[in-house]
Image 1: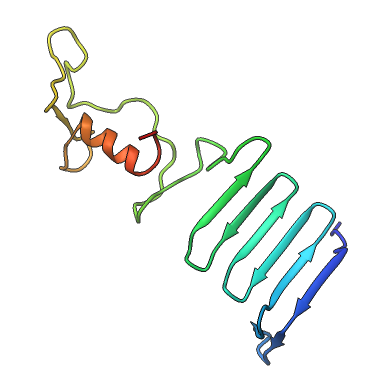
Image 2: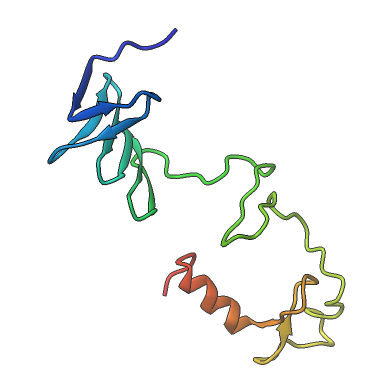
Amino acid sequence: MSEIIEDLKISNIEVASNLGVRLTGSNPQIKSTTANATLNITADGDVDISSTSAGININSQGAIELVSTVSGVLVATSAGQKIGFYGSTPIVRPTGTGLTGLAGVGSSSTHVLLDTTFDGDLGSTAYAIGDIVKALKQLGLIAQ
């Protein structure tokens, strides 16, 4: 059953013959509020969807902000969901090591040195541990 909208505010809206909607005027917005959630679309292109404990904002510059004050933000909720970054093909969460070209690494007969590089058996680019740490820090995945 659909929920009834308790409050719908529409100002400075033009509906075109093809049913497209254009926001006009000095501060136009579409805002819908129910007891537990709010949807707000502004003329700047910002889209805010929020509830009492979580929200998403997509601003006109393309930044996406996810907010959760209760259980945190999850990106993919199971190992079978795919994620990709910077134009790479999305994949499911990798499992196991799968590295066949690193025989001996970690054993007592072979040591990892400062300049030891790894390619992860994928592609031709090899990275030293410092390269990996730097990339993780630059992406904000580990603290600087």
